[in-house]
Length: 269
Picture 1 (cartoon, rainbow, N blue to C red):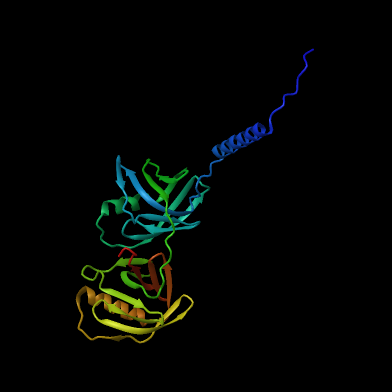
Picture 2: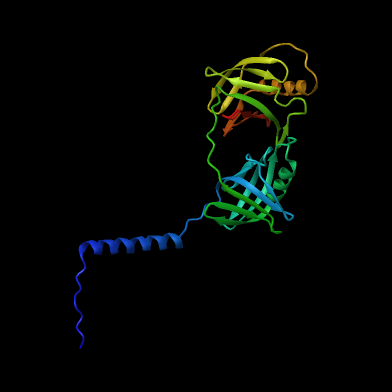
């Protein structure tokens, strides 16, 4: 009968073997259980594939996917949409409101809006998310860092769009960039309405802003700038406005559904 002899292993070697085994075990565990991203979150759009073509996204194209709502930017125009997830494998997108500005890259904007609707399957990778349509077209995305919300005060806000109920319209041609305002720390506000300069005092109650009487210059204004000025004057005089800041976008909305969307200049600007 064979006799097994006890083999003495030096303590140092035993420690090395134990650490090696533990390290191998962790590597296998990580490889087998790699964590894939949750579709809910902020995503930067990299590219679209549709009709046998690849369209590369502008830097501003993004989707913020929530549990029940999505919002984002087609590259120039902003949008909202309803979403309904089927686990992490599919999502159904119901387009909502969007701005209607004429943009430089309308080919990408139009294609993005066309793909981001209906039932989309979700392909998750370690560092990306791909949405696929029934015909195989794709929206490829990577995680986007959260943009800190701008401060209401000490920032120049440029009016980009006007809201009327569920309709969001860009400013008419000839009035782009004409309406701007700044809210100071003491809640005094000043700027231009589109043609005339104005100033006023604002009171703040939570997310509600109420503009006091406007003091304005008295130039006669007509055309697109005059149209914008008339609408903003009515809006500011309509009573409390609900304010919401998301990233560098400010929305002011009155009780009747009318309002504005303004953008703060980026740090680079």
